[in-house]
Amino acid sequence: MDRADKVFKALADPSRRKLIDRLHAKNGQTLGELCKGLDMARQSVTQHLGLLEDANLISVQWQGREKLHYFNPVPIYEIYERWIRKFEQERLDALHKFKTNLE
Amino acid sequence: MKMIMSTETFVYVTYIATTPEKVWRASIYGELTRQYWGHVNVSDWKPGADWKLVADGGKQTVHVVGKVVECVPNKRYVVTWADPSDATVSSKHSRLAVDIEIVDDMTRVCVTHDQLTQEMQKEITNG
Image (tube, rainbow over all chains, first blue to last red; front, top):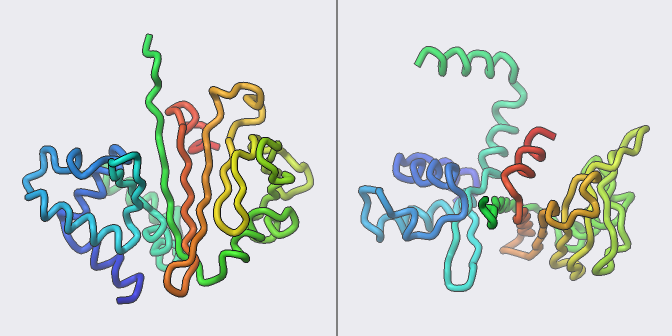
């Protein structure tokens, strides 16, 4: 699978987006920490993390025996560079703020 | 008072269609860093040596200073990272490690910025 395909596929799932959100809130978590408070089997979380890692949306570092997961925003930035930046960033930003304020 | 400050870590990974040697040269050699990064990395890259990141412009402003911690050609370099005003305050140095390796037909570049206190992180984000 193409790298970009992997990224879109990985993002096309609410559970995986939730895992990214959780790492965004607190970077460098273990599998155990990520499982806490999630209504998901540990095995599913492991699978989701594997897919995210394969798509390069998560980078991993070992600290002793602990595997720490970090959100890697580089592929999302590449999507931005390719499809968004060339449009008018400021107007998009204004529109986004407008939407967020209304919601 | 809290004695141990919690620190932040960023791990950014990107795959580049080039060779580790080219990534290395573009990161280490002054003139090439100017071309590839838009700023100049200045150091002799011996462990313990000073390094600095200088803006590529008329003013040649020094943006970041630090020490070289590790330097393994084509594989890995580690530097400390601080605001020039904190050059002598080691507690205000964070650490930047760059790991370079071949994965399939690409070069994987992993940038790890750690030992960042929240205060330092704010400065980087704002600066």
